[in-house]
Image: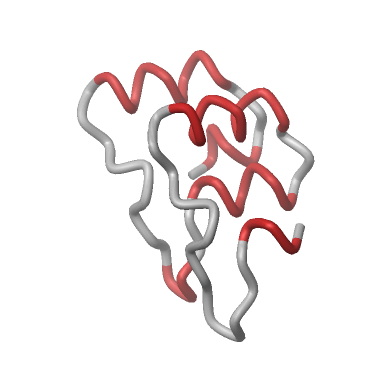
Length: 68
């Protein structure tokens, strides 16, 4: 999740290669893709989408990645 906030696609890619779930949810329903898009981390968001992150995943309150 922090690699997404920090726009660190190299670390994000390493974590994904090691088996991290790109659609894992943090408390409140946040996903790494939501963290990336809400913080303007375009490179990491692009990587997450390419690796299968759900762009329609909703968090608490009904917000989705597309709303950021």
